[in-house]
Amino acid sequence: MLQSFLKSFRAALKDPIRQSRLIVLHTIGSHPDACNRIIDFKDPYRVKDKNYEYLACYVSSIKKTDDFISRVYEILSKEELRTGRPFSIIYFSDHGQVHKLNDGKVLLNNNVASKFHYDIPLIKIDSDNKDLRLTLSSEKSGLNFTEGLANWMGIRNPDLLLYDLFDGKKDPTDFGLKRKIESIKTPPDPTIDLSSHLQ
Image 1 (cartoon, rainbow, N blue to C red):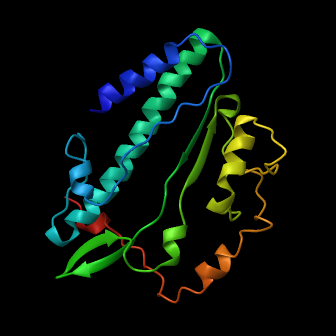
Image 2: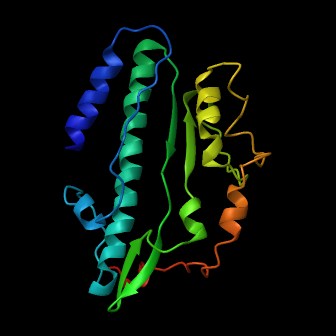
């Protein structure tokens, strides 16, 4: 399935269009059933304790996503060598998850209110900055994402604010979202160290 997906991506890159272009690659993510998401993945994590099996599937699905982004980057890098066209990749997810125990089994879901549902990855990879690695901790709101995406693509419109997702600055406004997140009283979801449970 991944091969046919990447084949379609390569075909889109062969289109002789000269202007800037946006190609959206929508993955199906890691849920609701992470173990079903990795049935075609060659190198999943395996655990000794079945109670951690779903968590291992989830971590494997993240690894699968990393591999996918790496393949996309390799394809774009080869295309840049062939055509001289630089590229930029943005990766983001829609929401985070929290874990719960069900008869001793560790499961992940988003049906319990948690601040972690709003804590998601946002990654940019630019071919012009291959040797630059910068980690930003500024809080950005998804409510401002449209303006940020437009700015990234170089779109200017009087109805859109000039807004940079990667300027390292906290959002001046998030339309009350931070207050909503802070009102969630669910205890923080602790990190689970899977390493001692791996085969």
